[in-house]
Amino acid sequence: MLEATDLAKSYGPLAAVSGISLTVRGGQIVGLLGPNGAGKTTTVSMLCGLATPDRGSVRVAGKPLSETAQEAKRRVGLVPQEIALYEEMGAEANLRLMGALYGVDEPLLSRRVAAALELVGLSDRARDKPARFSGGMKRRLNIACALVHDPDVLLLDEPTVGVDPQSRNAIFENLETLRDRGKALLYTTHYMEEAERLCDHIVIVDHGRVIASDTRENLLKLGTAPAVPKGPSLESVFLKLTGRDLRDSA
Image 1 (spheres, one colour):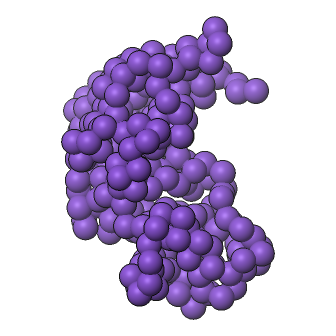
Image 2: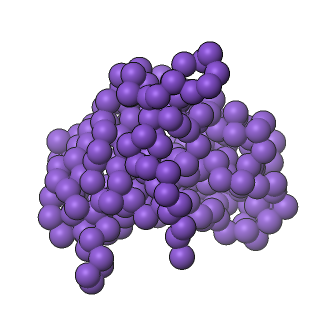
């Protein structure tokens, strides 16, 4: 459903991405992991058409994604790292605006809005403003906004930052439901336990390149056994591949 081939992107002398390839199929959650500055957010920006690659290509359902490829772009939904809501508009109004921007007309728009609110558990808060929501509720509404035009591909850039355990679990259940419905999901996170729970396939990037790409089970075989009897963890694999040096971001 989503295929990226040899993506590269530089900003002046900085090579943010240097040849990343990945594939996400329908009914699959692919984890995109990497240290700070590894190129994850730049990759997501190219996958949704916000940034144009210097080299390489993106295809959605076999069709090329480009600045003018509106049909392909409509099949992609983006949940950005920063919450992107109009705080003084009601939750339903936020969804209606997003749907209208994607060209969804009535009566389909009303059905899509209702379905998105129900999925994320906010039907009873449809008229309330996000300014009064908790962080977890805002994150869930952020996901709903990416779903209202019914995309085939959903890109999620660290969608659980700063949320409580209950909201995080609710988001996980939402994403698992979408996977079971045949959606293709790409999920970036710094939380290894999230990737272990959610992701069928994991791509680890560092310095703008893919350094590992395999199923969760196969990657765990690369891990070094920790000092507990649980066996290797995804965190041990990650540290083995990317090192233990701090990666502070500005």
